[in-house]
Image 1 (spheres, each protein chain N blue to C red):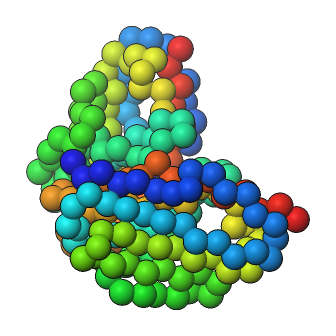
Image 2 (cartoon, helix red, strand yellow; image 1 turned 90 degrees about the vertical axis):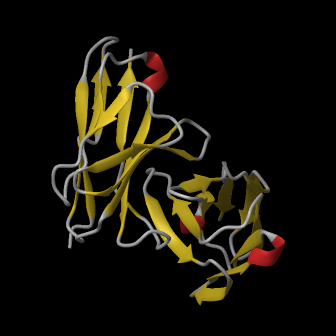
Amino acid sequence: NAGVTQTPKFRILKIGQSMTLQCTQDMNHNYMYWYRQDPGMGLKLIYYSVGAGITDKGEVPNGYNVSRSTTEDFPLRLELAAPSQTSVYFCASTAFLGYEQYFGPGTRLTVT
Amino acid sequence: GIQVEQSPPDLILQEGANSTLRCNFSDSVNNLQWFHQNPWGQLINLFYIPSGTKQNGRLSATTVATERYSLLYISSSQTTDSGVYFCAVRGANNLFFGTGTRLTVIP
């Protein structure tokens, strides 16, 4: 098992550009999550999904969109990138609600 | 959301020393996880410990859910233990993270 994989590892965007962060898990987990980590801080939840076709907002969803067309994939879309979205983005998954979450390696995004 | 406080915020240890990291949380929780974020940014699961005590090599953790705290013990610290240690507790739908304890182990 590769676990949770994310692409790209690094990206620099100009203000106003858009991009999609990819996340894939091969553990057949129903629950998937997107977090952001700002410098010196813990992680905050952006969006989550409890299964294919079902997504919901977390603590900090503004400026982002998600979709979940398959169990494996949970892409995060940034529209009109802003400097405030400079952060490290982590994707995670878990088999059942309340069980431990497994994290991907992260995507470091800089918006200038 | 649930408030999660970790202490101390920073810790510097000589290699071989022991340490205790603390995590306090503001509400009843269904699970608690400890993570180590290494200097390359990777998040590594250490413990899934909603209650009780677990041990894994030089690391152990104890959660007392009724008193809303958890402790992470690191014994005989090594330079590879350096990084940031996070605890995270689960609310209704997601994990709430503390701001971490930054550990530096010097040889």
